[in-house]
Image (cartoon, rainbow, N blue to C red; front, top):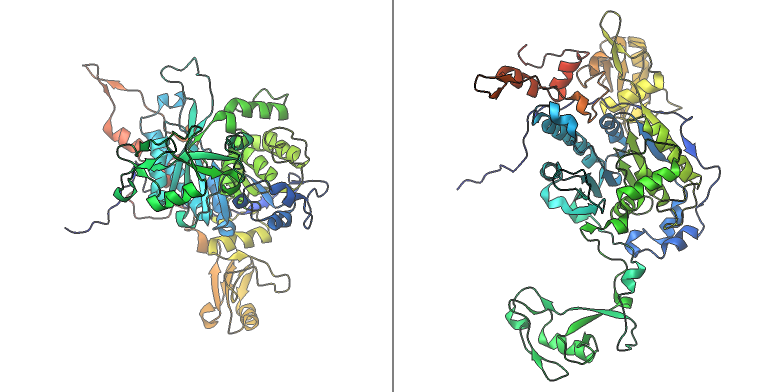
Length: 600
């Protein structure tokens, strides 16, 4: 039988349509950036190291690395469409993010009542696919991602994530108890939980962190036989399978013989069991008449405990706890988020997926919980948010965290005293706009530095201006550079630059015009802008958001004579095919109507 290379994948209307994203420039607004008035943690002191010695060893890089981390100031808050923001981060942060947490819109609610069934799911899947592709590229090889979702879209997201990350990199499904009491307004079953899908970029590279032991867990260890090795607990000595060589009778101190239950066997061979008895590592009960159990000493247990897939609301917080945390920060705000996430929940994710100093990313920042928790835990963070609450909630919240004026959440648990800072960025406008004669031109809002950085992103160069060499605006290697200018390049100018570049280096020149045959200069490549980049992106497209307002409205049903609900097939087909690029063209004209071979 012939081998098939076909794979299982989720399909939906418009899946083949993908946006051609413009890699935008990020512009810092220093008036909104913020940092502490003084350093709280400085490199070279032992405060951080001592504070972290109580954590499991694999939850920290080492005591010294915790010292080296010090206060973190290079965190980033980005205001703008999150898909464009992720694209803007791609060049600098590909392969650098250790832990990602996202809580995307769940595609639920009565607002969908007036939309065609299936369209909203297709749009949601397309928009999630586009984001997951970039998020995966940003992860380190040992990086992980947590995706929070409810049960309406859980199954769709699971199959989509399997396709994007690979089923072999699926680490587990976590169930979070977000509320305890049922909702009396629920029509059928009151939802009291959300899911977190947990994936690795490469599972074989992933270091799975353990959780810090609690006093309650340590209290389970006792020492009823006064063993000099200290407190211990016992565990089952059988395994859930039958192995003939491990199925033998054991004589208890009381004289009774016992065997494993049907279908089971002992977890150790007979000779090893005898050694454990001689070393007082088997417990037969106070009367010596109980099934044998293995003694596990607290002094020998690995630091930390393995996380389970059930996250109790009492352990990691509930929605109502998160509301109280926000209310304490914004006591006069009547518009507290409906379903905020508690800091303890995000702390659990960051504990499992990262170490001090690692980069943590949340591209659906909401009220800013991820950044607040990451700051308190000594992680570097990036948050992206398009809503105005970026300014009304996230910035004020992070200022309080940095100033040590946020006493709630995990502050006490991690002994947070404040410190550090963040930089605020907004997305630059589109590089290409139309002039009064409908011609594509460089956006007049761009200064020379912005233009150079934008062209570096578009051409795959790292923006790295050399203050001493005017024609070095960026590099792709040690010997390949880019020069961006609005000047007209003449033969004499190109000849002079070619001599300076020399025979062992190469230079890409992006200019507004040139008057020479550039092919005579072997070390130069000359491109005219904006013509050279017109087909690279969807210019002027500023909104790729997961907003249901982008969905087409369902037309009134046509009722036939027998009462059946019927719609014209041609109209329906026309609507459901407007996704991605086609949808953008239908809603707002593209700046450049490039012929892509499709019939008019």
